[in-house]
Length: 152
Image (cartoon, rainbow, N blue to C red; front, side, top):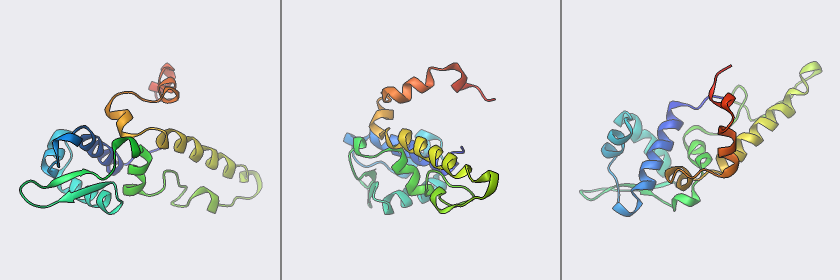
């Protein structure tokens, strides 16, 4: 599975906003600097997140961006979907829209199972979980296996 730079930047920006919730709106420049994200790229991401209902923006000297909902109510999957679309696709197609024949027929349930597991993890982790470094137990358990940290 591949997480795009756009998705990574969006999640990092959302986490920056989650930790600054009580401080008021943050300027895009401040988020970009804090997370080492190219400013122009971030502006487009924040615009998508605004259109997707995840962030609010306000213009002016005291303006900036803030989360539109509590960090507990926004999953990592929500952020990724807003900026990248479906969490799992095959050649740009969602698994239920695929069909295979012959020996490849069992690929479809494999792709659906993969999507279900990705959803279970990313939908089950909120911005608040990550910002507080308190991942759900089932996610933390997956990281305890040393093989999880190595590339085959």
